[in-house]
Length: 359
Image (cartoon, rainbow, N blue to C red; front, top):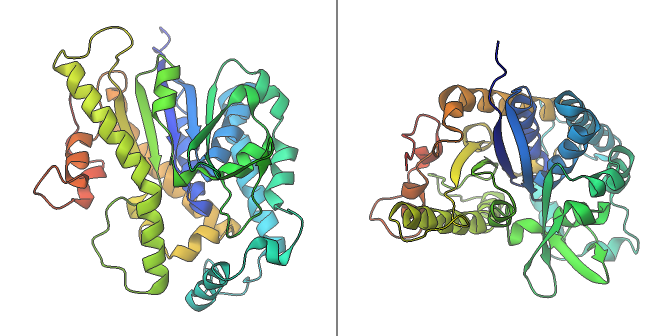
């Protein structure tokens, strides 16, 4: 039997705290597909960690090693959280009580992490150092990495590449400055990349010859219910802020694809981008904001399973479109989100049964 044709894809992984375990599940399922070749990964915050862990696993021993390494990372996070978690006696998934969560978030607006400790003791640092051979990642010429951070001084995007990557750059991509000390790289401070790119897509498309980008979306773009509780309002503001750059990039790609279709952009350097999205709207949308801080093993495993299910559904319905066309109606989504349409934004736009954009 002839070997199946390889299908190169780029991955764009959003951040979302513990909800990044949903992305773990998506990647775990995609890694079971032997014909998928991952040419580049762009990640922000938890997406950056998934990106580096997956890439190092692929370099170490291929798809199965990458799957094992992702599992080791996330269960390691659960073990670390179990030692540090102050709220461990709640029923079910032990989600932090709304009052305690809102009180802790209020405290972050009154005090900074520097008020409590003069040293940076981020527990993720040792976990990443023990799991990732950063020297091997830097020597790699197989998988391109784009780890997104926000440069504090200018508010601009700093996208770190595989050949220069260190643990501090990954920590910077996940640094919420109200919770962690600011990572310093070459005497410059960097914060969570979600403020400016969640994640960056365009640098990745320019640096590769791969046309297909699979976005793993964690933060709901559209919500139909009006947030009224303090935590809900703050969480929705965070979602809007952390999705703004993605919507801008989708609009840019949509316009470029339109110009290529119209014959107004010619030449090899102008290629259409096929956009695909595996999202957690239904799986994650109803979880309380506090769940992004919960790294309990049972909860993380449940998110992994939901991510695997979402990826399986997407592969069954849209996998054959890779290399040919986009698999969600990004034109209509962008139009509704940027006031180019009289229609109200439709939360069903990203669902897998939505008619694909065939352009």
